[in-house]
Amino acid sequence: MNTIIGLKTPSRAKAAEMLSTVLADEFLLYTKTLNAHWNVEGPDFHSKHLFFEGQYKALSEEIDEIAERIRSLGHYAPATLEQFLKLTHFTEKSNDENTSLGFIASLLSDHDDLIMHLRGMIEELTDKVKDSGTADFLTGIMETHEKMAWMLRAHL
View (cartoon, rainbow, N blue to C red):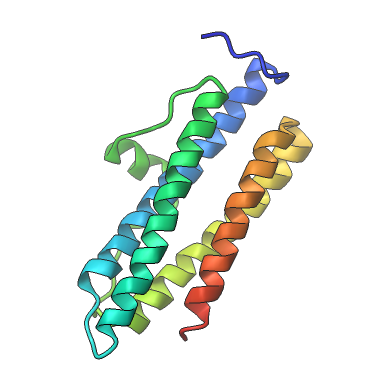
């Protein structure tokens, strides 16, 4: 398929490469949020179980949108656990305890890290890659993570 969207091939390739790392990060964060949803324990189980469900559903939507953005740039989205683990800058490390506060602190740290990572990518996409569409797209993703981080932070 010939992709003609006003970006040169190297720019589309660089943007797709950057998006692939974000996709991998999102997938690991999604998995960690599912872990929290499934395994949280304590007197606040029910409310946190529902809270984490809302967060993993939002991450699922982000994952799909990122993969589709990669495809719109004319590239294939990574779609295996092996690829995600090679591309992500997150670890699979989980909590020692399955308390809501432990899960919240861990997830908040990952959201904050991803937000900072996205800020750098947005700058690079704008200044070096000259892909304002993908920069704008990632700005929306970043704003979603800022809101999710705020909701997590409000529990601490």
